[in-house]
Image (cartoon, rainbow, N blue to C red):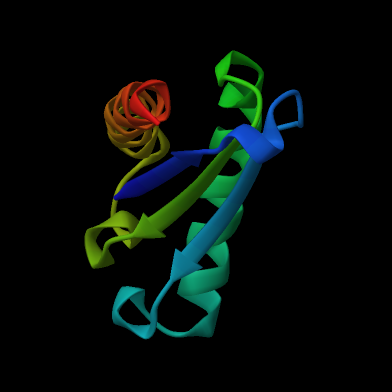
Length: 93
């Protein structure tokens, strides 16, 4: 799951990305591995995101069992939806 927010106070600022990986994902080793994988995937995509965006990526328990390709597809799908909603809602403000 990905949440994105864009505010006028951060216009022109770089994108910020945070990660939430709960205990439901697994033990500390699994959670840290999942977070590292998500961080690497997000770093590859950050340049394509609009400036001033705050993004929070929340890992579902299934993320620990996904291979990199599946995780990348899921992240892309969720990012696209969240960014679209954030940009649309910032335009209404």
